[in-house]
Image (cartoon, rainbow, N blue to C red):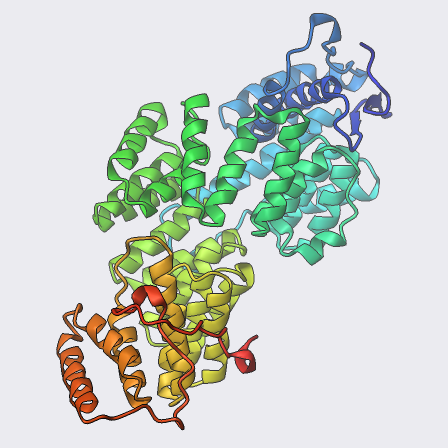
Length: 597
């Protein structure tokens, strides 16, 4: 079958660099597979191993091609032939991480491939030296003083090539990486966008671009090429930006067009469900993924986070042992073992393994965040702050690090600081009730009660994970002597916990019944007050008050007291909770329009 020009074209520019372009549809999966196999080879030749692996895994998920349809490698140019000996030697040194040695033998080479490997070797040499100097440092001051000394020289040289329009797609990618490392974000974004236009099949350029996008608005203004690779990029960036519904829709579309066997897509879907805390669904997908790809290590630290949350000790222990057998010197393995020790409350050992992960890769986001959590458990707030700050340096979109900093400053009783960090966490996770409840508590401590009300109400409206927002809102109304609103919140809270179907210990249940018993007693609604007082008797902390109130109600009933028509009493318990099944009026919606954000 001949290659369709509308789907793929492979041409040669003057210096002999392949230019690959791909259309924006998935109508011809055979041609897409050819492109993936070709780009896997090109990236492998240049030492871009992660991009090569990604392309190869995706190609593997598509049906095999017959021999006649396999594409030959791109033809060699005169410059390639002249540099072949130096390139072959340097690539051998590069593969064993002798980067300075590789760069030395590539100096003066003219072919695009050899030039890229020369510049990339110099870049990686600088990164390796920087990592060696910072590997034992956790302090932001020490870390900030260690730089990759090669970056400025590389920028000057690559900038000249860029202005002369002599950089191919791989050269543009490396130039973008250098600019990003020098914190020249705007310039880096422009260069990465250019790289995706010149070489749309290189996943590394898309991934680097993804790391620089901070919100959906920023994404709208990017002029991206109309290629099928863009769909993978959008799905990934939506996951990173916590736009999970959009991400899941994109991944489902990719599965529908023919990538159903892709372990990459399956793992990304599992990560997406993890991000929205659909733990059962995420665990199910990860377990299925482990059956399909039992030696996979990528994303297993995320899997271990889910097992940790569910306190599944035996499963987490099995995962840790299994990954140790596969490769105990991978960052994911160290994080899984760290989670295992953390679940066993051996926090010193857990922190040790997270430190080991960071020695293997100082830019590994998950390890910094998890180490911050462990230092929090050990009450070492200064070390926790440093760890969370490192996590933010690696990825400013990590809401867990912002939230962790907020918690740390809350412990240190610095409410203005923790307000700032909780706000940042909330911006990244606007529909996460935990961030909103934390913000509400912070506003309450700062005596900004109107803002606190808004946060608690919003936390309830988006789906309160911990079932605490209504109680906190009720206590706030109670504090402001707004008894009607407080009663309404307590009733809604009781309705929610009795209808959620989960057997969970709710510490504030007795508080709610005690307040409602007193409220109905003041309203002289003896039946409702009696029901709540009887419920109070079921809890140790309110038993005596419940009994005393029941005695008072009995005494007043014997005296012939009747409810007062002047007292507002629009709230009643659900019939299912009433001891004598007295018919009750339906509870009206929460009357909090004045504080709704």
